[in-house]
Image 1: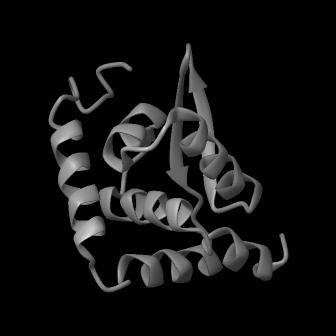
Image 2: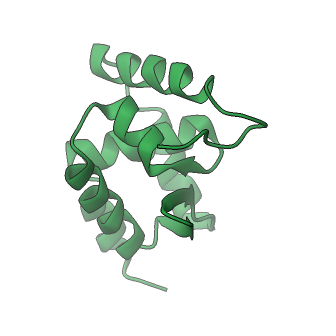
Image 3: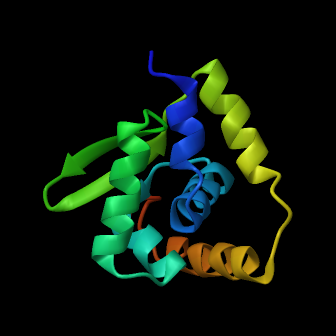
Length: 116
């Protein structure tokens, strides 16, 4: 198990916090392209942010062909952090993120990303 301080450091960045919040709210595995569209950030910025969250053991990642998928890594410490992130007061930016993700998820086929 990693040092809990690393998990707190990992969520100390705006992009990483926003991505983690979307994953917590969605409560399902998300494709990197779905997060890129929802957060309206360049691919490299989202990939780097997700890599930090994976390194901090907050997320699990898996590859399916050229697509990367991310899911919350469940354990007692992480679950407490995810709950705290989900309860961060909603700002206009966070509302917009959630709205864009909802729209993006509506494009799924059989509850699977329709592709990048």
